[in-house]
Length: 260
Image (cartoon, rainbow, N blue to C red; front, side, top):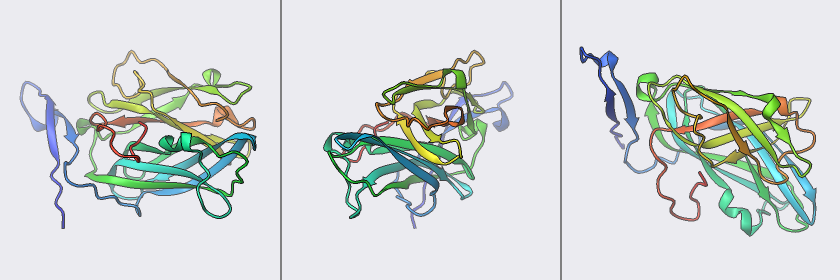
């Protein structure tokens, strides 16, 4: 049995020094990853191929759910596009974009995620794969330790699509935590008029107002990759997650390092 030691860092103390008045961010455990592949699950997913067979992108969207009573920390998500024979058809140039991390998934939370990957020339696409692996588990917490919800609201009139399938997605974020967390980008899911998931993506660009606690917040905007938004996407129904972490991302190492 592996025992994880959870350390807390004290940031603020009221004059009376009472524990209830302290803002303390949980420090992630330094023990070996647990690599849990069975708890966080994919509840919905879908994809669309955008472009011609000679040069196309497959945009993939999914919703992850944490049904446990613990916090899933740094869930590594691997997205793949498979041919009819079950083999990957992602082009070599895009393989480094197949893995990203969702830093925090609270108990019972559902998180929209996605990816847009170029496929090899003339490849036949059969299905897609979205595989979440939880790196560590943390006990449930609250806003005093950085484990409260960060909610997002889409700004529809600033969420747009261009003719080539690129676009801009804009959202407001509000954190219930006692201090700012670290932004590791954003992820999103696209739906059609019937509510079906038809794609999604991830931005690895940190958002200045994505994880902060300031009352002087402003909207966050990121651009999407070429051919990543299908024509049939109902943009006002876009679901966005602000990817917030307790600590800076680790230094990238290995071919499966997350892009964010």
